[in-house]
Image 1 (cartoon, one colour):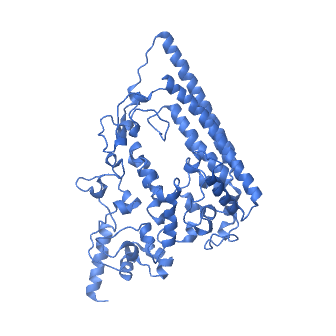
Image 2 (cartoon, helix red, strand yellow):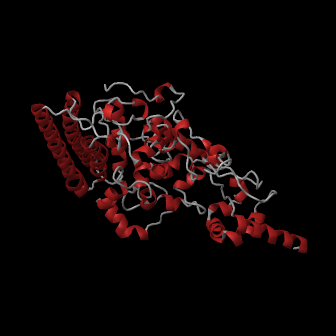
Image 3 (cartoon, rainbow, N blue to C red):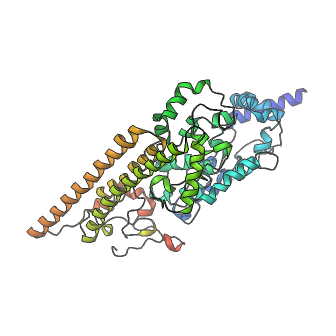
Length: 466
């Protein structure tokens, strides 16, 4: 190597180390907002993305901020990155990309002033992973839930960015970014299918009160066998009968390797909604699940268990409906504390009452109902279909019992209080803290003087309580 080239590489590496490759400006600094000045979707003018959106939704937000000029390929990339990001290069060398000569520039571009982060479209080019990306995108036809629509329809379109402060709901965007990038499951830069097949990979996002998949799987016989014996398995084997001692997340939901993980989904919205068990679609999808179970179990066993799980979910919705009726009657009689007209306006509903996906800016009894449906109900669903006995009954179903009792107890107190106020002639005036406060004021959408959206459904009327 010539002395001139050595000097160039030295200063090139020094500059990268000093400034940081792929570094980004502060999106909130004056004059530096760039594409991150406003959000997307019908609510776009109401929110500003946090800086991490550059990497969570790179197609829309990533902008290179690199001091290096020039175009570089393959070995030239490695020469520098072995010094500044050695682990990345080592991981890449262990990957199949290395053997296939899929070098840095193939996924990120070769012009340092136009570098980009790969998206599914990058990975799905004709000579790469076209089949897998096509299958992945076909999830959109299945509706909700779907990894392929997890970010834009289910996070951006649903208005999460304005119902809560951005930093508070960053976790939603982080996991839901699976729509936008394949490394949500195929961790960079090894991109091993063997890692993507492991339950722990799915559990990175599929955990917590509203989707306790990994907790319920690990508590099942399938999960216990995987924990006991999984280190002895060859995770490079394909997802076919006989290759694994027990089924895993990928084995059942990505049957025989499909990248459409939801084509057989029976319950939309993770059990929050009931299903019509007399529908043709239900029969078709249930038949598909029984076929998967047949790899280890008889059809009779599979149908019996799955039908029992259906009944478990049905019972949980009985409690949800009972609580809902109690709260609806309170609203009808004007007994909620506080009534919607005395709260800050919410999304496009304004002061209209609803029991939709609201975690804040509602009364305690309404939030208890939300927990019954979205947290406890979903856990019952997840536990029942993942064969997690304790989670199904003692953790979730019995907790839902307690929530129903809380709804009844609170409703009783509210009605008795209103009766006493009426008897002694007290006219209660709702407290101001329902409408404003340090945290409440931080929510863009519920600011009383917030400008209206250009979208007709996003206005914030100060109408009467309906």
